[in-house]
Image (cartoon, rainbow, N blue to C red):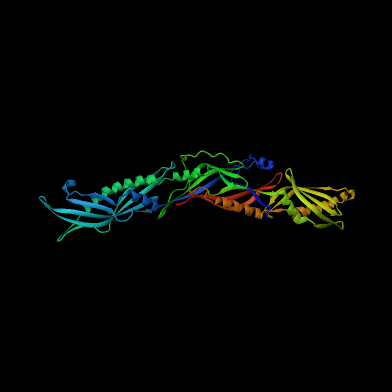
Length: 454
């Protein structure tokens, strides 16, 4: 249906006062609608693992002196054998494993004469990290040692004598484990920064962007608050969802001024779930020229009986006067003249058409006798118009749906992609301008902001 043209995409439309809009449309007070944008955030634990591994050298600890620690005659070196591994727990906690290889050498003797023997063995050092997320965006982690799991136990073999050195090794490992706890907490506080995602979402829409080059239409979003769901810990990732409450404004004509970016976001609200519905209004315009063409296809040359005589529609056109659509039909035959049927346009949800209500009739003819027959004629032609005339909205709705979803599924900024889907839409109000009929379409959709790479 070529007559359907999307006039502008209005996401939470505000009051229009810009140029390029017909007077009656400009005077319509579009509501400023509060909506929400959701932003799912996933932090792979592999990323945190990489960060912690980068901060912990392969050679974790080294003691090259026999005589330190009260002449303990003991040397030790500790290496990571594999990357440090993080696993999500079930109580907002992380389980951390550090696999280690240990070389140890111990001297046995008296009076300064010692026999030395070395050995290599492996263990897995375990930690438990609890995570607390405060609404001021502060992440607090508390990492505690969770013991060792020996892969091979440390034993020195002197032939006939085998000496276990587990207690000596554990003393050194426990000291290193305490240091590990501090390192892990420092790195977590730096890397688990959810405010950066909120800032990213907040500042993304402060710069108006063009959503319709054809109609020079701009979208401007004003965030007003952030909600966030509790952190969810899985085996290989941490999940949370940010919900950004917004007001949206659409402008036509000149690009509106951008808002100043923010460097921090106010405290968030903790909530079990965040709203994922984006309420918007779209408008579509049907020019009166196309409305007239539709009427001609329906009624031109159509005949009906009046008092055993024929009346034929020879021409028809559609235009607007104030808040009424006017259908002006030229007829020939028993009634020769101009029939003017006007009505207030409304949306019929059952027919999925824009139809006329509260119709009025007027006949212009020079034949006085025909005027006396106009009451019967009026009943027939008005009934015909009311039953058969209407502007189908199915394609109009589908065109609007397509336009919205195209605008909702783009990467407007590098690394940030919008992802949206329209659930339902229907015309709620019909407006008249000097040139055509404008349908205001209420739309329910979802809109997400995805961070590429997470």
